Length: 304
Length: 253
View 1 (cartoon, helix red, strand yellow):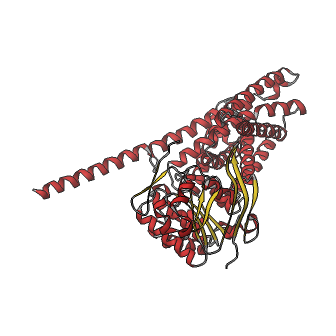
View 2 (spheres, rainbow over the protein chains, first blue to last red):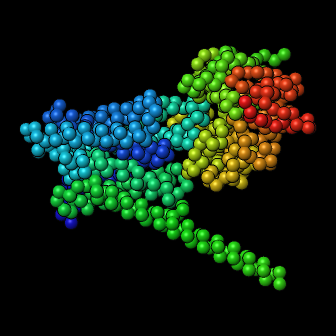
View 3 (spheres, rainbow over the protein chains, first blue to last red):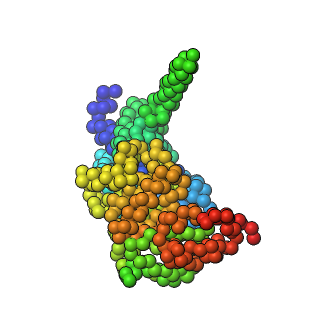
């Protein structure tokens, strides 16, 4: 174990998955209150064809190139979802389901082709499906770090704007906030978070990084700021611990372990969470019941 | 006579293919309190939203102080329908009221202590000071409406638009809101309110705009709010009940 931790590459990878978890936790809160959790799932699946196309075009596995490809592909997916919703009678959730499946299927098809091409077997593109943090090299890590920090910065600097955008769009528009601009910013930070995460976590499970920390944080607070900070914390812990566990064995995918850690945090929050956690709810109900019963008893005795 | 403050010319708007407003023309003088009255689906909310650029206008022109909306939006306050936001959002009453100051604070700038104080005094005005740090999800409907009104008050606008502020609130809240509206009027602000309750129109508003897809009648309440005109707006399907202010609506074809 200690030898793994001392390995400098593992340290870099740990830091990057942790920052990724933090960024995803923060952006997840935005998606949660925009009521668009499924959107993150659709867009991460929609990123896959872009990764493969970028690889086929440039014939090298440079993370920045692949990320740009993934980003374009996810944005096309986002645009198509919006267009289908506006221009046809198909509802948004159906559109998201369609785009998710079609883009992912297309991506897998291209991946098969890429793997058969000369040198494709060693491409390691498969790691984009379930995530393979250990396969990242230092330059990948630096790319991830910079983008993740940028995303975090965008949300924290505009905290006040994000809050009013998510709470009351019409009012925000009335006092001069550009909703179109905010929508564009939202899509950009969401897609950026997704594409920097897919190598470490994989396109299939990336959505979990965005959804689970946010819903876990919801169980602990009634303040938007605290929710963002907690979600960042939960995401960071999931990223780091999940990567650590997967690094213990060789060739273990990272994504599933990160999700398992995140899910454990969620399960704990669901039961013990301060805000409507199951356990607290039960205790509060019983205490209240006791109080009411005692009150009735005292009344009855007083009447005697 | 005071000059015109709000001017709406030939305004029309639609949802997809359904035209809900057509050829709307009216003018509003400063310092008036106008009730926008009409049946369901008459386009009352749409009228406000279209005037405030929240809904696209098909045709027509709206001007405030002789200028188009984007140039004067800081002088206009809007209170949307209570149901238009997610009250489960994790924030407290004071924070929601502070949002009314975001325009003044400036984008990307921090909220300061003086802004909090301003927001707190607006809450106090609405009788909600004790609820400042209450979760908005734990407020009653009437309290939520007061918070919305307080948020509009801190904007310190010259013109206010309110979409059914009295819908589903109890008598105490209704009184509190009306007191504030009349106070706004008395200090020279102009207020337009979408209103549903025909029985209170005469007590609450000095001007009435009877709307049903277009403006049917508009002017001083005592002149415009007559049996015939109201029947006109509601499609003639109503019966004047006994007393002075008793109306009953029937919807037969």
